[in-house]
Amino acid sequence: MTEQNKARYLFPSGYMADPSAHVFGDHLYIYPSHDRESGIPENDNGDHFDMRDYHVLRLDAPDQPEATDLGKILDVEDIPWAGRQLWDNDVVEYDGQYYLIYSLKDKNDTFHLGVAVAERPEGPFLPLPDPIRGSYSIDPCAFKDDDHEVYIYFGGLWGGQLQRYHDNRALEKAHLPEGSEPALPARVAKMDMATLQFAEEPRPVVITDDEGNPLRADDPHRFFEASWMHKRNGIYYFSYSTGDSHLLCYATSTSPYGPFRFRGELLQPVVGWTTHHSIVEWRGRWFLFHHDSVPSGGRTWLRSIKVAELVYEADGSLHLK
Ligand code: FUB
Image (cartoon, rainbow, N blue to C red; front, side):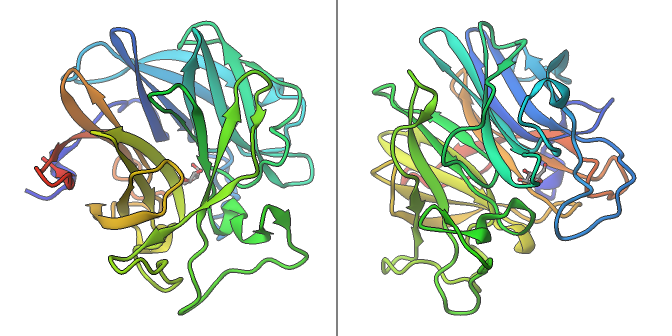
């Protein structure tokens, strides 16, 4: 049986991608990107990923065959600073409120991260008038640690624009590292939940080899996009997509800031260009939510959400069941 066969599709009647899964109360909620056919030709800038709203899906039990679509929770029309392209998002619960952190291009075609707030996990989410100050690029993961501090992991290469920034400043000319140069890292910043702004300058999420050397730009395991963070037994697991080498990988640390030691591959390339995921524990089992483009016949911008089960080994390594 291949890894693809171990997973099941959760929303066969529509195209959704980038599933961020969370357990709130008795239910598991999935916050995906909502793919659509825009007619825009495929390019490296990702213009064909022209999504305009978000829905939330719900599972009431781990083995429920399909997720329930609870409907639209945010529309690009309702976001004052919106240009185009609602990409990956994530949701964090804090003091009984729900905060959706999302990727969107502004009116100058520059990606930033926005915040929208709801009183219930099923929304509706009310967007704040402006993006998070000092935010850039895409693919936020909002992680609440055991001490209730919230960290936002983010960043994505190519169409995700991370190569346009260095030390949190926009470059005059984008620089994409090559060969033996250190790979571009994801970023992480603690969030001030009172102001809904970054509490600090974003820091690099450095992934190293076993000798502590940062992964090189030409390493097929280097970071590309789709950050996710989960914690188990005091260890922080940073997982991510490698983009053009089409893997999901993970790395571990004893600090939410890293550095993270590369540990292994979680998922082999799927049908479709992108691979993206979330990892969550529910009722004593661990799940990998991800997507592929099999149902759309390989159209990379029309993706379908899947779930597979994960297991841990005694040494803390992680793989598909
Ligand atoms: O869904 C749009 C983009 O494709 C996401 O932001 C990336 O992670 C990739 O999945």
